[in-house]
Length: 457
Ligand code: F0G
Image 1 (cartoon, rainbow, N blue to C red):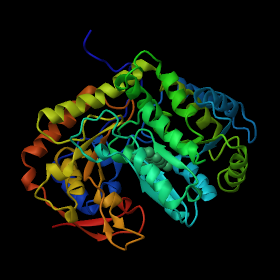
Image 2: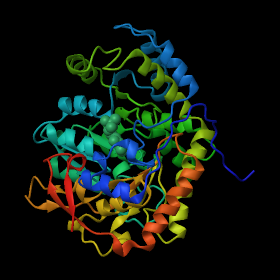
Image 3: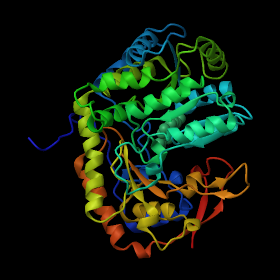
C-alpha cells in the first residue's frame, strides 16, 4: 500500500472552535499582532510549537494513574531512570521540569563571564541561559544551513573548520563545552549527521572540550540519519540514537518534544564531579534528585514516551506528514527551507514577502496573515525572535534568515488538518502583496518575541 496512515486511532476528541476572518482580525488587533498573546481557543490549527503539545497514548495515560508520588526513590523514578539509561547510556540522569531548567543548571555550572559556548545554532532559551550566565553563545552551522534552497541532507551540521578556528582564537580553556542541537531547530529543523558529530567529537577531544547534545528531537534526528546518511539504512533508529548519545559527554533534553509528554526535561552527564554539583543546584531550585520538580506521574509518562517515540512506524508517519506539507507548499511555488526537516516546515518569509523590508518584520507579518485568513497559528523565527544588539559591537544584529515555522504537534492533527493548512498557505500566497509590514512599539530586552507589541505600517 502507498498510503501512509496515522498509526493510531482516536479515543478522545477535543473540539475546535471555527471562527471568521473578521473575528480573527479583531483578536489580532487586541493581541498587538503577537500570536503568543492570542488565546488558544481562538486558534483553529495551532502550529505555534511542537513542544508540550503531543497527544499522549493510552499507555502513557495509564502510566499517569500508576505514578508513584513518593518524595524520594519513587517507583516511577526508577522506571524513568532505567529507560533513560538504556536509551542513552549516560551514568548521571537528572529529571527537570523542562529543557530550559536543564540549561539553567548546566550553564550556571559551566558558564560565566569570559566563557564561550559554540553550537550549530543555539535555541533561544539556550542562548538566553548562556548569556544570562555572562558567557557568549556562538553559532557555527555550516554555510548551507543558512541557505534555504540548498538541499544538503544535513544542514544542521557544525562547520568543523570554524570550530577549530574558534578554539584557536579564544583558547580551549575558555570553552567549557561545545553543544550540538539535534535536530537544529533554529536552523530549520535540519538534522546533524553521525559523520559530522564524530568529527566534532574528535576536534573537541583533541582540546579536552566536552561535547553536549541539545537532544530535544534526538529520535527525529536519528530517523533522518537512517533515511539520509550512507551506510545507516539498515540500522535501527534506537541503535543510531544510542550512537548519538555515545558520542557525547552529556545532554540537555526537553521531553516536551520527542519525550511525547506535555511537561518534563532531562539533564544527562558523564562527569561525576559535574553531576554532583548539578544535584546540589537541582535540589536548591527544582526538587530532590529523584523527581526534579515533576510529579511521579510525569516521570511515568516520560518513561513511556521515550520508548514510544522510537517506534519506526510512528517516525515514518511523523516525518512523512511533515514532508507532505513541505512538498505541497513547494509545488505551489511557496519558498520553504529545503529539504523538509524533522518537526516543522519553515517558510522563507523574506522570499514570500519581498515587498516587506527586514525592519518591518516580514515573518511576523506573514504569521499574522495566516492567522487572519485561516486561524492558523505559526511562529516567527527571524528578526523578532533573534534580532538583537550585539554585546561586542553595540550594533543591531539580524539573523541570516527570516522564517515562519509551521511546527507540527505529535499525534494531534490528521491529514485533513494538513490539507487545510496547505490550502490556507496557498491562498495567502496568491494575495501576498496585500500583507502589510509591522512596526515594533514595545519589547523587553530578552526573549522579546513572547511579549513584543506591534502596529501595522
Ligand atoms: N532546545 C531546543 C532545541 C528547543 O527547541 C527548545 C524548546 C528548548 C531547548 C527548550 O526547551 O521549552 O522545554 O524549556 N523549543 C520550543 C519550540 C519552545 O517551540 O521550539 P523547553
